[in-house]
Image (cartoon, one colour):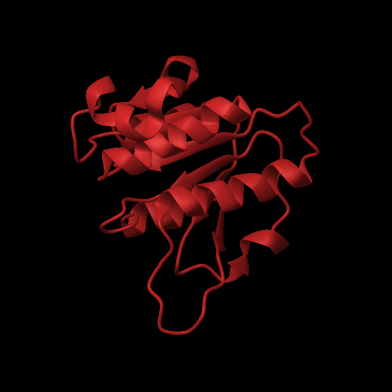
Length: 154
């Protein structure tokens, strides 16, 4: 069994957030949203991508970074940040069942203080000259690898 979680730092695009909530609902994972979001967190804004999966998604909202970070430290959870500034390829990293996989804002990633706070940073290797992969796709790729490594079976 896993207690892996996905965390979104101040997400900008409701469609991506809805897609990640749908992924999490299908995989029985919790999504932590670190506010403020760049849109109103409402069923209407998330429904297009999340469709009817939103009803079974587990979403925990954190009022800001400080509250989220305090909560996860109290829980003893490791924070694994997906970052284009990381050096460790995501498929070579050793995930643990209670990791929190953190994904930054679509427009700006995470600020330096959040980047520096992460216990680990992973990157999705890409061809030269490309900036980044869509955050929902990145979440699916990294979450899939973390679940594979932690031997989750339904």
